[in-house]
Image (cartoon, rainbow, N blue to C red; front, side, top):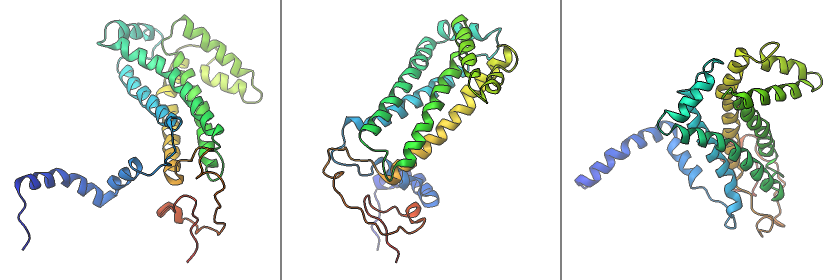
Length: 263
């Protein structure tokens, strides 16, 4: 006869039920636990946190950007006034705008620090070449995100900096003039330019960055965290040269350094 559960166990089971329901139908809970509590090399150090710091900086940019978008008006006649309203009148608006403004620079700096760490540690080599390519694609997208946001305050500095940036872009061979005309939305910077920069900054570029970050994280979980170059685990380890079973790694990844053999 099963033991009758006490009140504490019943309350715990009730609180656990939504997670059990979600796990049974999607497996998301188990996947999240695997992502958060997966094993990493024992000799990993603070250098390995640069990727997480970069992701955190991007999430801060997303959060503060959403708040700013609630008050910003993408119109040449009111854009500057809306930014001043955010800074001077909205509660803690100066803080949110400052975090977004300076956080953009922090995000770019952390990206380059993270890439330098990956390069110096040799973490771009087999089997992580694809992850290196994904990270390299994130760099120009992040720079474009910063450039597209520079015009949004629509003051003199933002206006003329955008003029210079678009003109430099227009000197590129082949696609340069077309891209410059597309970004301007006409013969000169005006309402169409601001609307295009706002849509790029708020929709297209963040969506592309989020997609690549998702792929980047999947590959990290799939391939594991690389050991430092001075690690005994990273040096002189032989790799099984047997061909892997096609597609098997997507379902049940093999342990690091071990290649699955066909049955």
